[in-house]
Image 1: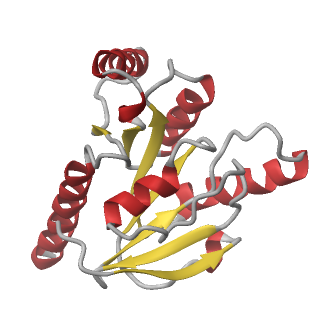
Image 2: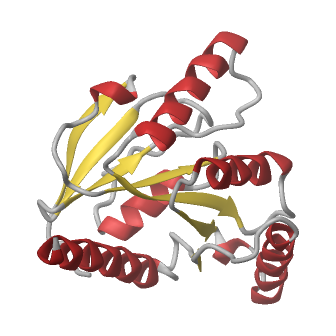
Length: 205
């Protein structure tokens, strides 16, 4: 997929106020400081489209970007930031849970995982929730340039083995680097294939 246009569309603090219509939405979520904004900027080729912050956990909004006039890229707030107040954590939890479980336009949720780390309990619990709720999702391992290739491969393998303890079939997953562009084409090709399938099914209906 070639991204010809990528524009900010709207921000919301409530999932029920997100755009109407039937455009498919591909949403991105992960723990705070996992490199989500940098990944979005890399995928779209628009430096600064998603604002990066030196303060983890700052974003508490659902941000929609319209891509090629055909689909939405959705930047969701990060989870698991320990320094948030209890009230903010509860509010954020409700926003995320409502969006991922109730948003009918959500086509695929990409869960971002830091490839430098061993499996984190909070990520496993979040993915388990997605499975229980029947949310379609994929996994994107980020920051692959920050460790050796062998270390990244081992961490990805360990994470997948952890998932296999509970999952019969693994979701699609990608290994990426916002610094050198690794994995970007694979993610966009996957999105393109999903959209193609949706359009073909519409023709059949």
